[in-house]
Image (cartoon, rainbow, N blue to C red):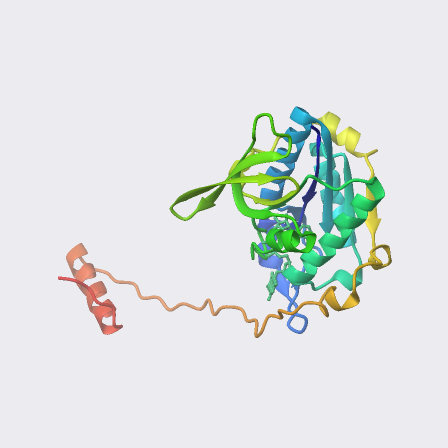
Length: 277
Ligand SMILES: Cc1cc2nc3c(=O)[nH]c(=O)nc-3n(C[C@H](O)[C@H](O)[C@H](O)COP(=O)(O)OP(=O)(O)OC[C@H]3O[C@@H](n4cnc5c(N)ncnc54)[C@H](O)[C@@H]3O)c2cc1C
Protein backbone atom coordinates (compact mmCIF):
# COMPACT_ATOMS: atom_id res chain seq x y z
CA UNK A 1 0.00 0.00 0.00
CA UNK A 2 1.24 3.48 -0.87
CA UNK A 3 0.97 6.27 1.71
CA UNK A 4 0.17 9.91 1.05
CA UNK A 5 1.72 12.23 3.56
CA UNK A 6 1.39 15.94 4.31
CA UNK A 7 4.02 17.60 6.47
CA UNK A 8 3.38 20.88 8.33
CA UNK A 9 6.42 23.11 8.12
CA UNK A 10 6.96 26.27 10.14
CA UNK A 11 9.51 28.94 9.18
CA UNK A 12 11.31 30.14 12.31
CA UNK A 13 13.77 33.01 12.86
CA UNK A 14 17.40 32.06 12.28
CA UNK A 15 18.93 31.73 15.80
CA UNK A 16 21.97 33.68 14.59
CA UNK A 17 19.70 36.73 14.45
CA UNK A 18 17.80 36.25 17.72
CA UNK A 19 19.22 39.54 19.00
CA UNK A 20 17.17 41.33 16.30
CA UNK A 21 13.89 39.58 17.17
CA UNK A 22 11.47 41.99 18.86
CA UNK A 23 7.89 41.67 20.04
CA UNK A 24 5.25 44.17 19.00
CA UNK A 25 4.22 45.75 22.32
CA UNK A 26 0.61 46.23 21.21
CA UNK A 27 -0.20 43.12 19.15
CA UNK A 28 2.24 40.95 21.20
CA UNK A 29 3.39 39.25 18.02
CA UNK A 30 6.95 38.66 16.82
CA UNK A 31 8.32 41.32 14.49
CA UNK A 32 10.20 39.34 11.88
CA UNK A 33 10.89 42.03 9.27
CA UNK A 34 14.43 41.70 7.95
CA UNK A 35 15.17 38.58 9.99
CA UNK A 36 16.17 35.53 7.93
CA UNK A 37 14.11 32.41 8.55
CA UNK A 38 14.91 28.70 8.55
CA UNK A 39 12.85 25.54 8.30
CA UNK A 40 11.96 24.63 11.90
CA UNK A 41 14.71 22.02 12.53
CA UNK A 42 12.53 19.12 13.72
CA UNK A 43 10.17 19.65 10.76
CA UNK A 44 13.05 18.47 8.56
CA UNK A 45 13.02 15.16 10.45
CA UNK A 46 9.29 14.90 9.71
CA UNK A 47 9.99 15.53 6.02
CA UNK A 48 12.70 12.87 6.03
CA UNK A 49 10.23 10.35 7.50
CA UNK A 50 7.70 11.26 4.80
CA UNK A 51 10.32 10.88 2.05
CA UNK A 52 11.36 7.45 3.37
CA UNK A 53 7.73 6.29 3.53
CA UNK A 54 7.38 7.32 -0.12
CA UNK A 55 10.64 5.59 -1.05
CA UNK A 56 9.68 2.28 0.63
CA UNK A 57 5.97 2.12 -0.09
CA UNK A 58 5.16 4.73 -2.76
CA UNK A 59 2.71 7.62 -2.45
CA UNK A 60 3.31 11.35 -2.31
CA UNK A 61 4.71 14.02 -0.01
CA UNK A 62 3.08 17.44 0.24
CA UNK A 63 4.15 20.21 2.61
CA UNK A 64 1.97 22.99 4.01
CA UNK A 65 2.87 26.13 5.87
CA UNK A 66 0.92 29.05 7.30
CA UNK A 67 3.31 31.96 7.06
CA UNK A 68 4.08 35.34 5.47
CA UNK A 69 4.58 35.42 1.66
CA UNK A 70 8.40 35.23 1.86
CA UNK A 71 8.09 31.69 3.28
CA UNK A 72 8.15 30.51 -0.32
CA UNK A 73 11.96 30.35 -0.02
CA UNK A 74 11.65 27.92 2.90
CA UNK A 75 9.21 25.83 0.92
CA UNK A 76 11.57 25.70 -2.07
CA UNK A 77 14.17 24.30 0.34
CA UNK A 78 11.90 21.45 1.44
CA UNK A 79 10.97 20.81 -2.19
CA UNK A 80 14.72 20.53 -2.83
CA UNK A 81 14.89 17.93 -0.04
CA UNK A 82 12.47 15.87 -2.12
CA UNK A 83 8.87 16.84 -1.28
CA UNK A 84 6.59 16.71 -4.33
CA UNK A 85 4.59 19.89 -3.83
CA UNK A 86 4.13 22.75 -1.39
CA UNK A 87 1.23 24.87 -0.20
CA UNK A 88 1.61 28.25 1.47
CA UNK A 89 -1.35 29.62 3.42
CA UNK A 90 -0.64 33.31 3.50
CA UNK A 91 -2.95 36.20 4.23
CA UNK A 92 -3.10 39.10 6.69
CA UNK A 93 -6.29 37.47 7.99
CA UNK A 94 -4.16 34.56 9.31
CA UNK A 95 -1.63 36.82 11.08
CA UNK A 96 -1.17 36.88 14.86
CA UNK A 97 -2.65 33.39 15.24
CA UNK A 98 -2.22 31.49 18.48
CA UNK A 99 -1.88 27.72 18.37
CA UNK A 100 -5.62 27.12 18.04
CA UNK A 101 -6.03 29.54 15.12
CA UNK A 102 -2.83 28.13 13.54
CA UNK A 103 -4.06 24.54 13.73
CA UNK A 104 -7.51 25.60 12.46
CA UNK A 105 -6.00 27.30 9.40
CA UNK A 106 -3.71 24.33 8.70
CA UNK A 107 -6.72 22.02 9.04
CA UNK A 108 -8.64 23.95 6.38
CA UNK A 109 -5.55 24.05 4.17
CA UNK A 110 -5.14 20.27 4.45
CA UNK A 111 -8.84 19.68 3.73
CA UNK A 112 -8.56 21.88 0.64
CA UNK A 113 -5.50 19.96 -0.61
CA UNK A 114 -7.35 16.68 -0.05
CA UNK A 115 -10.39 17.97 -1.96
CA UNK A 116 -8.16 19.04 -4.86
CA UNK A 117 -6.42 15.66 -4.96
CA UNK A 118 -9.48 13.53 -4.41
CA UNK A 119 -8.00 11.51 -1.53
CA UNK A 120 -7.34 11.88 2.19
CA UNK A 121 -3.80 11.85 3.58
CA UNK A 122 -2.69 8.71 5.43
CA UNK A 123 -0.27 10.65 7.61
CA UNK A 124 -0.28 14.27 8.75
CA UNK A 125 3.16 14.95 10.21
CA UNK A 126 4.33 17.86 12.35
CA UNK A 127 7.47 18.51 14.30
CA UNK A 128 7.09 17.95 18.04
CA UNK A 129 7.61 21.66 18.70
CA UNK A 130 8.76 24.82 17.00
CA UNK A 131 12.05 26.53 17.79
CA UNK A 132 10.32 29.86 18.46
CA UNK A 133 6.79 29.47 19.92
CA UNK A 134 7.56 25.94 21.19
CA UNK A 135 4.15 25.31 22.71
CA UNK A 136 4.07 21.75 21.30
CA UNK A 137 0.31 22.08 20.86
CA UNK A 138 -0.26 22.36 17.12
CA UNK A 139 0.00 18.65 16.16
CA UNK A 140 -2.52 17.51 18.80
CA UNK A 141 -4.93 20.33 17.96
CA UNK A 142 -4.67 19.43 14.28
CA UNK A 143 -5.52 15.83 15.17
CA UNK A 144 -8.63 17.04 16.97
CA UNK A 145 -9.76 19.29 14.10
CA UNK A 146 -9.24 16.44 11.63
CA UNK A 147 -10.86 13.89 13.95
CA UNK A 148 -7.87 11.52 13.53
CA UNK A 149 -5.91 9.68 16.23
CA UNK A 150 -2.83 11.70 17.17
CA UNK A 151 0.38 11.12 19.07
CA UNK A 152 3.07 13.54 20.18
CA UNK A 153 6.84 13.13 20.55
CA UNK A 154 6.96 10.04 18.34
CA UNK A 155 10.51 8.83 17.81
CA UNK A 156 9.90 5.40 16.23
CA UNK A 157 7.40 4.33 13.59
CA UNK A 158 7.22 0.82 12.12
CA UNK A 159 4.73 -0.79 9.81
CA UNK A 160 3.06 -3.87 11.25
CA UNK A 161 3.91 -6.71 8.82
CA UNK A 162 1.00 -7.87 6.68
CA UNK A 163 -1.35 -5.08 7.75
CA UNK A 164 -1.40 -2.10 5.40
CA UNK A 165 -2.90 0.44 7.76
CA UNK A 166 -1.35 -0.71 11.04
CA UNK A 167 1.75 0.86 12.55
CA UNK A 168 3.57 0.58 15.86
CA UNK A 169 5.03 3.72 17.41
CA UNK A 170 7.09 4.78 20.38
CA UNK A 171 6.71 8.13 22.13
CA UNK A 172 9.34 9.68 24.38
CA UNK A 173 8.57 10.26 28.04
CA UNK A 174 10.63 11.86 30.76
CA UNK A 175 12.00 8.58 32.09
CA UNK A 176 11.42 6.19 29.24
CA UNK A 177 9.00 5.56 26.40
CA UNK A 178 5.50 4.30 25.60
CA UNK A 179 4.60 1.85 22.85
CA UNK A 180 1.51 2.37 20.74
CA UNK A 181 -0.36 0.60 17.96
CA UNK A 182 -2.39 2.68 15.55
CA UNK A 183 -4.10 2.69 12.20
CA UNK A 184 -3.89 5.33 9.51
CA UNK A 185 -4.96 8.08 9.15
CA UNK A 186 -2.65 9.29 11.89
CA UNK A 187 -1.46 12.73 12.99
CA UNK A 188 2.03 12.54 14.47
CA UNK A 189 4.15 15.18 16.17
CA UNK A 190 7.58 13.66 15.63
CA UNK A 191 10.77 14.03 17.64
CA UNK A 192 14.12 14.77 16.05
CA UNK A 193 15.29 11.16 16.58
CA UNK A 194 12.66 9.78 14.19
CA UNK A 195 14.94 10.31 11.17
CA UNK A 196 18.10 12.25 10.33
CA UNK A 197 17.30 14.77 7.57
CA UNK A 198 19.19 14.19 4.32
CA UNK A 199 21.47 16.76 2.72
CA UNK A 200 20.06 18.74 -0.15
CA UNK A 201 21.71 17.84 -3.46
CA UNK A 202 22.36 20.20 -6.38
CA UNK A 203 20.02 18.02 -8.42
CA UNK A 204 17.35 18.49 -5.72
CA UNK A 205 17.73 22.28 -5.93
CA UNK A 206 17.38 22.19 -9.72
CA UNK A 207 14.29 19.97 -9.58
CA UNK A 208 12.68 22.13 -6.87
CA UNK A 209 12.48 25.10 -9.24
CA UNK A 210 9.81 23.40 -11.33
CA UNK A 211 7.84 21.71 -8.54
CA UNK A 212 4.38 23.13 -7.76
CA UNK A 213 4.18 25.75 -5.00
CA UNK A 214 0.61 26.96 -4.48
CA UNK A 215 -0.25 30.05 -2.43
CA UNK A 216 -3.70 30.25 -0.87
CA UNK A 217 -5.20 33.24 0.90
CA UNK A 218 -8.32 33.77 3.00
CA UNK A 219 -10.60 33.57 -0.05
CA UNK A 220 -9.24 30.13 -0.94
CA UNK A 221 -10.43 28.65 2.37
CA UNK A 222 -14.15 29.50 2.17
CA UNK A 223 -15.13 26.79 4.66
CA UNK A 224 -13.07 28.46 7.41
CA UNK A 225 -14.92 30.82 9.73
CA UNK A 226 -13.50 34.30 10.43
CA UNK A 227 -14.13 33.92 14.15
CA UNK A 228 -11.41 31.21 14.36
CA UNK A 229 -8.76 32.88 12.19
CA UNK A 230 -5.74 35.02 13.01
CA UNK A 231 -5.38 37.37 15.95
CA UNK A 232 -9.14 37.88 16.28
CA UNK A 233 -9.77 34.15 16.35
CA UNK A 234 -7.10 33.48 18.98
CA UNK A 235 -8.51 32.79 22.45
CA UNK A 236 -5.11 33.16 24.13
CA UNK A 237 -3.43 36.56 24.14
CA UNK A 238 -0.09 37.19 25.83
CA UNK A 239 -0.32 39.59 28.78
CA UNK A 240 2.47 42.01 29.66
CA UNK A 241 5.66 41.39 27.69
CA UNK A 242 8.92 42.91 28.90
CA UNK A 243 12.63 42.49 28.36
CA UNK A 244 14.47 40.98 31.32
CA UNK A 245 16.70 43.33 33.29
CA UNK A 246 20.15 42.12 32.36
CA UNK A 247 22.01 44.67 34.49
CA UNK A 248 24.44 42.94 36.85
CA UNK A 249 26.64 44.32 39.59
CA UNK A 250 30.07 42.73 40.04
CA UNK A 251 32.72 42.68 42.70
CA UNK A 252 36.28 41.49 42.25
CA UNK A 253 37.74 39.49 45.14
CA UNK A 254 41.51 39.37 45.54
CA UNK A 255 43.83 37.52 47.92
CA UNK A 256 44.81 33.93 48.48
CA UNK A 257 42.38 31.20 47.38
CA UNK A 258 41.39 30.67 51.05
CA UNK A 259 40.71 34.40 51.54
CA UNK A 260 38.64 34.57 48.34
CA UNK A 261 36.57 31.49 49.27
CA UNK A 262 35.99 32.93 52.76
CA UNK A 263 34.83 36.23 51.26
CA UNK A 264 32.52 34.46 48.75
CA UNK A 265 30.94 32.40 51.57
CA UNK A 266 30.40 35.56 53.66
CA UNK A 267 28.72 37.40 50.79
CA UNK A 268 26.53 34.39 49.93
CA UNK A 269 25.40 34.01 53.57
CA UNK A 270 24.72 37.75 53.78
CA UNK A 271 22.41 37.35 50.81
CA UNK A 272 20.48 34.50 52.35
CA UNK A 273 22.20 31.56 50.64
CA UNK A 274 22.62 28.57 52.96
CA UNK A 275 26.27 27.45 52.67
CA UNK A 276 27.29 24.24 54.44
CA UNK A 277 30.30 23.80 56.77
C1 LIG B 1 6.19 35.63 22.28
C2 LIG B 1 5.20 34.58 21.88
C3 LIG B 1 4.03 34.46 22.56
C4 LIG B 1 3.11 33.49 22.21
N1 LIG B 1 1.97 33.41 22.91
C5 LIG B 1 1.07 32.46 22.61
C6 LIG B 1 -0.13 32.35 23.35
O1 LIG B 1 -0.39 33.09 24.29
N2 LIG B 1 -0.99 31.38 23.00
C7 LIG B 1 -0.75 30.51 21.98
O2 LIG B 1 -1.57 29.65 21.70
N3 LIG B 1 0.37 30.59 21.24
C8 LIG B 1 1.31 31.53 21.54
N4 LIG B 1 2.45 31.61 20.82
C9 LIG B 1 2.67 30.65 19.74
C10 LIG B 1 2.42 31.30 18.40
O3 LIG B 1 1.17 31.81 18.26
C11 LIG B 1 2.85 30.32 17.35
O4 LIG B 1 3.55 31.00 16.35
C12 LIG B 1 1.84 29.46 16.60
O5 LIG B 1 0.58 29.39 17.12
C13 LIG B 1 2.37 28.03 16.48
O6 LIG B 1 2.64 27.55 17.75
P1 LIG B 1 4.05 26.96 18.09
O7 LIG B 1 5.12 27.64 17.31
O8 LIG B 1 4.16 26.95 19.57
O9 LIG B 1 3.86 25.47 17.50
P2 LIG B 1 4.26 24.08 18.09
O10 LIG B 1 3.04 23.37 18.54
O11 LIG B 1 5.40 24.17 19.05
O12 LIG B 1 4.77 23.44 16.72
C14 LIG B 1 4.70 22.05 16.46
C15 LIG B 1 4.69 21.81 14.98
O13 LIG B 1 3.49 22.31 14.42
C16 LIG B 1 3.72 22.71 13.07
N5 LIG B 1 3.45 24.15 12.95
C17 LIG B 1 3.38 25.10 13.91
N6 LIG B 1 3.09 26.29 13.37
C18 LIG B 1 2.99 26.09 12.03
C19 LIG B 1 2.72 26.94 10.92
N7 LIG B 1 2.50 28.25 11.08
N8 LIG B 1 2.71 26.40 9.69
C20 LIG B 1 2.93 25.07 9.52
N9 LIG B 1 3.19 24.23 10.52
C21 LIG B 1 3.21 24.73 11.76
C22 LIG B 1 5.19 22.41 12.78
O14 LIG B 1 5.28 21.11 12.24
C23 LIG B 1 5.80 22.45 14.18
O15 LIG B 1 7.01 21.71 14.29
C24 LIG B 1 3.39 32.58 21.14
C25 LIG B 1 4.58 32.70 20.45
C26 LIG B 1 5.50 33.67 20.82
C27 LIG B 1 6.77 33.74 20.07
